[in-house]
Image (cartoon, rainbow, N blue to C red; front, side, top):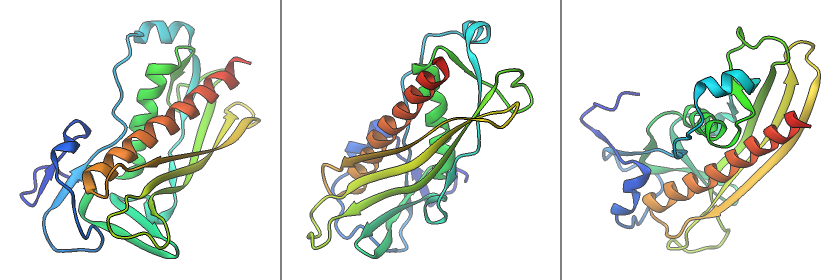
Length: 212
């Protein structure tokens, strides 16, 4: 997805609150899309050389999202009804942004792990597979149009040794984060907060599991 098409413009997380509230968020109005991102973390001070010398090699497998959430649309649910937020998209596909968020969290939180490719893993390398089944803004059944949704992210993480495909560990993760207002900006900001907690929990669990 290019960022230079004239009918779209980018809004980063740091600028989300500059947008006003949005009534009638769902559906499609035909207007130009506002682009959002999530998962931006602070830069870590640990150097690549330090990780190369001491880190346990880990490969981050392609993150799998359920079909309805694997693109760049922002999914909402209300009971059995499913709609996408109108005139709003992620700046890239959700799996791509989520993978970037995971990489940043490993850099920030797991000094004992170094991320490697499948080919360069070497002895002792482990693969982390994430399968996400929920990445949505969930409205309570019966709530009015002004009530903000709660962001729900859930999925399974599995650690597998590359050498013999032996299971090193598995765990299910669930995070919920209420949006502060029912606006596109606040919904995107809530996705960012939920993603930060979810990825931090996965990285901390991975680090602890591979240290045991």
